Image (cartoon, rainbow, N blue to C red; front, side):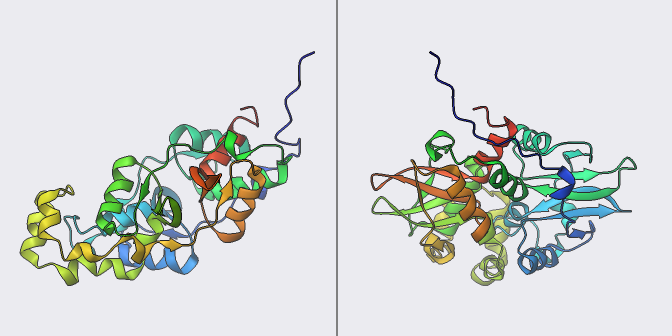
Length: 296
């Protein structure tokens, strides 16, 4: 007798129209300081760049973090949203389903889908958060976190410099790192942690113009730059990390992680087993379940 696998998603239809949000929009000429303030004020991760009511780009926390790096070639005050936005937009229409949106996010490794009408005008935005909320409606609470978690973990120590952390995020093409002390997670850092105002002052306050120019010509984080900026490197991961992160266990159900993400506005949670860090579960992992309609 063949053992039937448990059903992961209940057959509860969710109309795409019911989860679409009206995005906060900016123009290409909006300065990144203004964009930064808007992200913080509205507690969001992205802004849609609009021209004549048509979406032409999107700017995220990651884009802002890159633009405020001490290794950026332009003065912050001269950088506009149009300089840093992503122009290759992934869009769909109201005829699509939530599963279509999940598939697009999985395929292109993105966190949001822009919804347009037949006239190419902006209708709204669907984010991973919206899809995780949808998962909560459809979940049958039969899927263990161990089945979907990311097992490859990238970690840093509390004493690592903020620029080392930034370099690790960029080079590994990831959205977060876990801060570990004595083999235990003590914090988590995402691109959002680089957005607050204090990060904008690092390069201006602690380097002189000649050093900034020299660094901009050789922007990779290397031993030479680290030595020249040794006083800058006193800013550590512990200064910007979110401390005491929520944790889940590998044998917990995914529903538990989804609830924590929605309730506390977080996008990734360290996974433990027998007091050992064994993975991380993210919104992307949950969206991937929807992308396959629960068929892992």
